[in-house]
Length: 161
Image (spheres, rainbow, N blue to C red):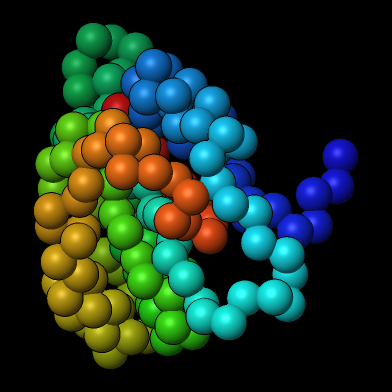
């Protein structure tokens, strides 16, 4: 199906596991019912983007242990968020618990920024300026306040449960 004028919600299999199924079902059910889909080329302002991140601070392993280093990848979160902000979009971060999401320990390396250590440091500093990332809104509160205020939903960096 082709929905050219609708905001895009793309979730990978791993990202689906990042949200409790009840929150995910509520979010998906309400998107279709509440979003005000604006026609392309008719927007006079840039708008708002809802960025979903994980509440998890660990990844369960098969042997029953938990890998505590799992979280969002720095480049997967900060590169698109910075680009959206530069284009004039307001970003709202949300997760199921409203707690500060954890960055994956293995993502803060220059390799993910073209091998450029200065670029890595720049994005770490940028991440530290994102007050909404430090204090994300609970998904249930986002839904209660109305999803029609958002022009797009992103879950690029949601992974750990």
